[in-house]
Length: 355
Ligand SMILES: C[S@@+](CC[C@H](N)C(=O)[O-])C[C@H]1O[C@@H](n2cnc3c(N)ncnc32)[C@H](O)[C@@H]1O
Image (cartoon, rainbow, N blue to C red; front, side):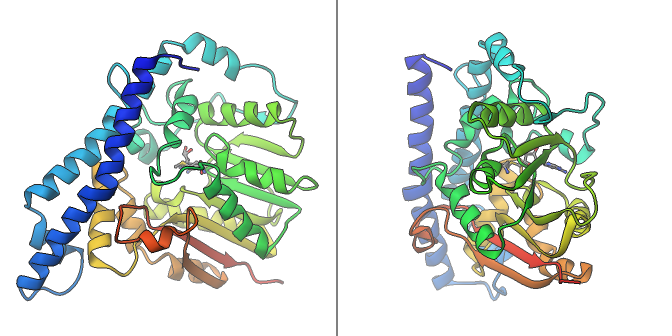
């Protein structure tokens, strides 16, 4: 969409700086933490609070945090940021998003009211969030290409997750909660050509892009609906699999609980619920880093998700076969853990027992 060498150079600079932050800056900060810990751990018990006490005031910590927050801000805002650079082409983008799609593929609710937890935060520093501006889905799609700077093949992550989900069950109907602009939904509808896939999301601009993408690929087995994951209005026991990708950490714990309960309601007996999200490993430095990332990147529910004990919550609802396991967003990613900054990708799966 945007053909401007100055824009490309600016975004290229931001990405290169992010890679520096991901690698050498992360390593320097970790080395300083290890050095302080070896010299004097102040008698504190292990945990992110101890890391904060050891290096919270360190200049490297502050510079690392500054880079983390402001590189993301630069990516989206400022003259050559993703939002203003796309806003110049607003008319063309809106024309493309509102082009007709096959009947039933897209359901937007003109009276939809956004929940407060969602509308009051510019999530991951996206100006206005991913819902308030017609072009937000297109801006988010462009931004998501470098969310995980270590990755080169951006579709790889979703395909890997799809493989994990479908290894458990190949359902006739699958629900993707928080489907965004359809990137997480796409590998499911591509794999389940004989079945039906439904994506729900709060954000109309994202759903419109998802439907355009599916229509362009001549998909016939997917539809996108503007609904909350907490209240999908889908019939009871109507899906064999319910999934989400990067949804739960964007919700406060009470909303996560309602989402798990809704997944239980719409799942058929014997069905699987599989989420891909972020839970820090058992490592105080990486946990401290993950909680700090949530604060610095306008993702305030990352820490509450990690602390809420989601496995117990799933069991309380009645789910069995609960599994929480690390996920590799690309081949060899887990070997990089602790060597480079990365999200603590985690698969959270459970089964509704067969009746
Ligand atoms: C980080 S995005 C992930 C999008 C997509 N799953 C992907 O992997 O590209 C999170 C999505 O969750 C959506 N979301 C947040 N709260 C929601 C809710 N209560 N119900 C449905 N979608 C929600 C947001 O609008 C956003 O599109």
